[in-house]
Length: 161
Image 1 (cartoon, rainbow, N blue to C red):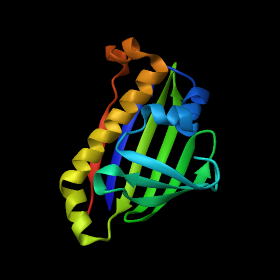
Image 2 (cartoon, rainbow, N blue to C red; image 1 turned 90 degrees about the vertical axis):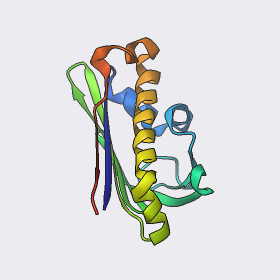
Image 3 (cartoon, one colour; image 1 turned 135 degrees about the horizontal axis):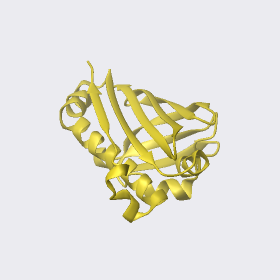
């Protein structure tokens, strides 16, 4: 099992975080340019919806993401395709800030792809996750606020096999 996790603290409210995590026009502003989302069923990030997430760096290879849980504190997606697992987006209030967690747990059955993912792919994914959360914070707080010492994100990436 490959596990990657990233956290960010943002000076905002949970309602604003939810909007940026679920509204396609806002998501497009902070999500990685290395991925594409193609709707399959339902509105993006609504309970029961599904979409295809493709990696441009892997010739648009991808997996189908299904929103299986959603409430006022988290969104859980199950992934199936070239990689199998789940992605969690969770947020909670911490004083005047909202902490946002992105955690991805997955397996790669294809041995050739797994060698790439466990090798260099996980480092690319780690950097991409960190950049996405930095952009999310910067869009919500503004560029000057993101550079202040109090709004640094901490990260933890674990790879388990």
